[in-house]
Amino acid sequence: MDIVKAVEQDYLRERHEHVEVGDYVRAHLQIREGDRVRIQVFEGTVIARSGAGLGEMITIRRLSYGVGVERVLPVHSPRIEKIEVVRKGKIRRAKLYYLRDRVGKKARVKEKLAVKNN
Image 1 (cartoon, rainbow, N blue to C red):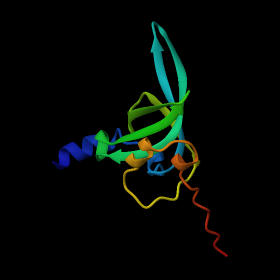
Image 2: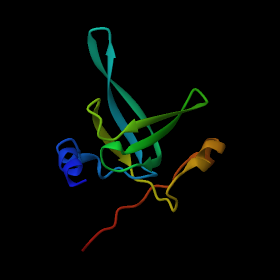
Image 3: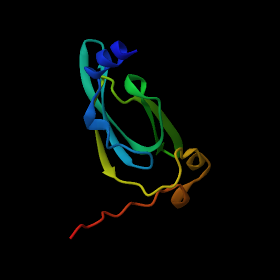
């Protein structure tokens, strides 16, 4: 088992450790169209995080023209250029599946305010 973990360490990305459930993120994805590769941005709220190691996934949800769209992305995939945290969310749940039933202002997550250390 230690051999598997040692091999996985080469492929893990530490820069995505700061993404948590409730955050509003902007994910830059590589999309291949024929022989061209372009970057597509998917923006939304992280409603779930599951798995561990290389198999770790996040579910991002957004509303597009009034229809809820969710994408499940492998966090350590080479197809993900970067994940930017736009806004940190203040939540008390591990999964935010209840947001699927909500519309409008009720579907928003409160923002976590930064703590000042003097």
